[in-house]
Amino acid sequence: MGDQHCFAKRRDHFLGQLEGMAAIIPAAPLVTHHADCEYPFRQNSDFWYLTGFDEPDAVALFMPYRPLEERFVLFVLPKDSVTEAWNGFRYGTEGAVIHFGADIAHPLEELPKRLGDYLKGAQGIAFRIGKHPTIEPIVLKALATQLDNVQRNGSSAFSLVAPCPILHQLRLYKESWELERMREASRISAKAHELARNVVRPGMNERYLQGLIEQYFLEQGARGPAYGSIVAGGDNACILHYTANNALLNDGELLLIDAGCCLSDYYNGDITRTFPINGRFTGEQKALYEIVLEAQQAAVESVVPGNNAEEVHKIAVRIIVEGLLELGLLEGSIDCLIEHGLYRHIYMHRTGHWLGLDVHDVGAYRLGDYPVNLQEGMVLTVEPGIYISDRFPVPEGQPSIDDRWKGIGIRIEDDVLVGEKYPEVLSCDAEKSVDAMQFRNT
Image 1 (cartoon, rainbow, N blue to C red):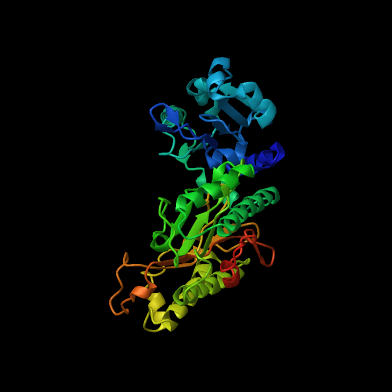
Image 2: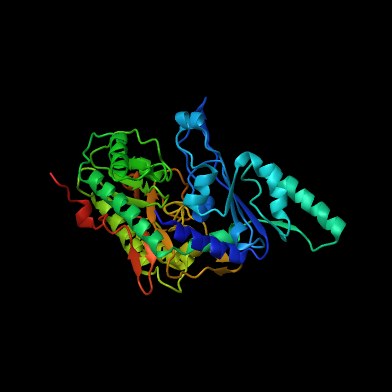
């Protein structure tokens, strides 16, 4: 994990952009799975980014208008030996100050009575409405009081805004230690893919490989999977978010694995590989795989400063459409097919997304009419694919698809850092060449 100096730097940047507003950033609550059992705790990414505090139900206040020694205040669950005996260690108010750099810490139960005083002198509140049902009524009551005071005193307007634009712009650019953690997440994820590919055999169950991959994540010290692992044999690979993972793997079909780990400090890997279950591509499988691989490699090479995610997508789309035309799976001019989206029954998703503390990480792709330019320190996935099934109707005027192509789903995904001049493929330890996909240790 990054040390508290890193979190303190982030808080300074955040405070510097609040312009006199108070920001209220709640932690995540525990979420019930069933009865009185909760899901494993997962901290709110914005809260974590600013605090590094990994306990539920806390609230952080950021107040640039207060004296230096009062600008970062944490409300936390108090220490309680009986509760800790059941549910584990808590840092409490003293630990929040000593270990997490809070200027002041209070028990969470004091938030309603203290919040109003802390807001005195603020020009407004930065708080995300609609996401924190327990904390929101407390914030809205404090806001109402402040608005009443504004009316009586005739002072400047008091507003409520979301902190997301500021925070998410900060999170879009990864610091050096964040990149080291993302390299580690990608390394572990890639090794798990290699492990699975080298043991797969016809007749195995998808679930066995899921267990193998996620066991490796845990053995390497990760929290576990960053998202629901996709282990999809044959036609299941044409279901983009397939997570049943309970079918037998058939001789002659492909296996698509989309899996990545989440580290202890929430940085994620996200990798997809597709390969023949029996170690040998059929002619149709190889032809489509080569198209996706060419599209993916060209798209990766375009992840450079000054380009943008839309151009990365367009590069992949054009190569895929060209390849499908050559195989007779599309008909018409390349430009017309792309302009009218007549390829989307075969390639229906975007080519990638930001990656960081969230798998689909925060950050704008467009600012108004203009795409956001890629800059050094951004990380995104590059993941074109081809999926041929009867689930999407063939557009009018396009050729019907012969059965020999159906049930083939292929995606190749890497995690890519925008470097100073060139892209860095963080997930390079996962092989993807045609020869490698047909190689297996015995």
